[in-house]
Length: 108
Image (cartoon, rainbow, N blue to C red):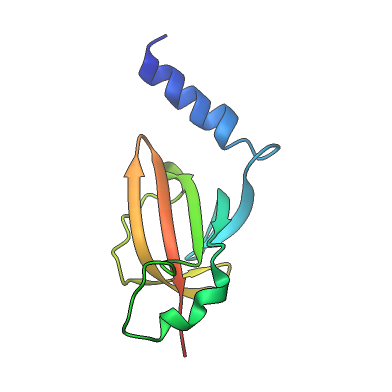
């Protein structure tokens, strides 16, 4: 087995194992298994409405999922829903079949 094959196997059987790490959520109408991480710097939320960006508040939710579960590239600033809540895409990256999506809550 090659290294690339082993990585693919680990992604599918370890990291995205619904009995261990992932939960089922709704991403823009599609049901996906994903890992969720939230930005822990909630006390600085004033920064979201101020022109000054100190870099502490960047995103509210980070969603990590397999590309095959939602095979669409998302653009920064795009409006999407996550669990039927509106968000803006802050950042999107995909590498080795794993997507990392950072979302900002919609203000107003």
